[in-house]
Length: 106
Image 1 (cartoon, rainbow, N blue to C red):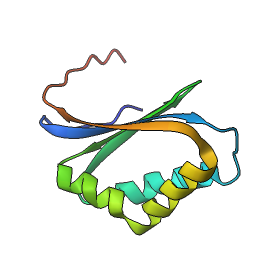
Image 2: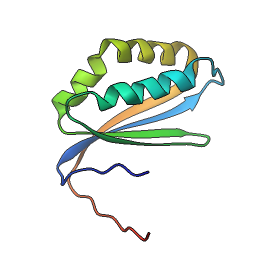
Image 3: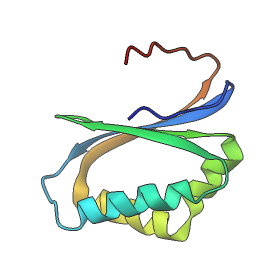
Image 4: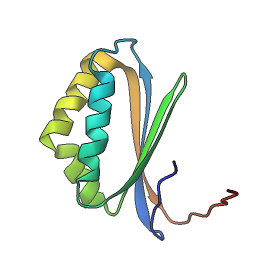
């Protein structure tokens, strides 16, 4: 499902990754991080896809909300585990969304 975002401007955090192949605890942690993010002030939605490259885009109302999420204690533990176990490499990009549009053909 696509995230239902408000009228711009808002922010997108784009997390792209290559996995190591270690799967122990990954799915549970990823699910928990989505649950936890949804509880954060300023969280607007999330979209994710995985093939050879994993791409997760989370949407936020402000840069302050993104900074707060990055500093969440449980999220910080998951970040550490990601660096040491699950990700061969990753990149985080933070963007301001100034315009969006869509086509719904259902």
